[in-house]
Each structure stands twice: as C-alpha cells, then as structure tokens.
Amino acid sequence: MKENKLFRKNLPPRTPEQDDLKKRIEQGMRDVSAQEYDTFVLERGRDRFAIAVKSLVTSVLNPRKHYEALEIGAGTGISTRRLNEIEYIHVTALDIREDYLEFGIRNGRIRSEQAVVGSFSELPFPDESFDVYVGVAILNQRADVDRFYEEISRVLKDGGLVFIPWTKVKDGSIEREMENIKKFPFEITSRGDWYLIGKRKPRMSSRS
Image (tube, rainbow, N blue to C red):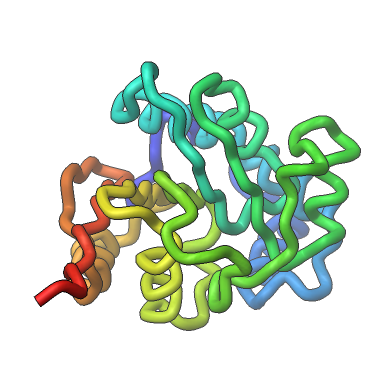
C-alpha cells in the first residue's frame, strides 16, 4: 500500500485506540461522533491531503470561469474549508450525517448555506446542476459504486469534471476505479499516483 507522501509524511504509528476507531469508521461510522472522526482524521494528515486536493483542482480549472462544485462526503468540513479558499468555485457540501455538517459549521469550515444533508445514492439535485465533483472521503464509504457514478453523471453538466483522490492507494485500486468509471459516460483525462480525473461526455441529442 502506497502512502501519499504529500500528507502522511512523518506521521507516528497509529495507537491501539486509533486502530479501533479506524475500524469503526470503515464499518460505516454509525457510532462515531463528529468529534471522534474529526480528531482522528486530522491526526492522520487529512488537512494536508485536503491541501493537496485543492492544489490538484486549481491546477486543472480555469480561474477566469465560475464553477459550481459538489463535494460528497463533506463530513466535518476539513476539505470544504480548503475548497472554499478557491475564489472561483462555489461548493455544495453534502453528507448523510447532519451532526458532522453542523460540527463543520460551528468550526467555521462550512457555511450554513452550503450544507446539504443527503446520500450519494439519491442526490437531492436536478440534472446537470454542477460543473465539478470532488470527494475526499467517500471512496471507502460507497456501498454501491454503480449508483455512485449514475448519480454523479446525472447531476454533472456535459464536460463536467470528476476528481477522484485516494488518501491511501492499494495495489490495483486505481485500475479498478478506471474500469468503474468507463462503464458510465466519462472519459479519463488525467491519472496520477493518487488520483483520477474524468470528464462527463456530452449527452445524446434527442433530435433525430
């Protein structure tokens, strides 16, 4: 397993308590409080990762345009805070846990008007609502990968971009994700050691 050195450099080994919390997070986070989650992921370099994602996004987007961006799995707003630093995008921060979003609002990372409670499997937005999708924490939480991409492809505009970053890269995970994406109307435009970027293909015209 490769560690993304951009944000995991010099981290100490996990404690037994952290190992237990990590398992609870991976098992669905139902009994993990917002404070527990936030403390753990910050201790494990999540803000450094969020900064790396911000840098990736800004390296691709055109600063002379305005973008409507959707973040799925916003959690306590660690990555939302960094995305909000990009002046030319407006972020909608979605998470299924209202208490996590409220934690992010109280800590000044998420603006209340940005926060939306909802599930990736049934996004509460009209078709073609967004120019950009980015999600830092959702890859490990998706119960249905096909439904994940169905919904993202629905709410993205033609030519919309998907940023898929990994906090950890397991052997073959990027290749498997490329196969997942290719089942839907996306083309891969860029691949790095810890991310994929795809573009939403144009919809078929209804005209004959």
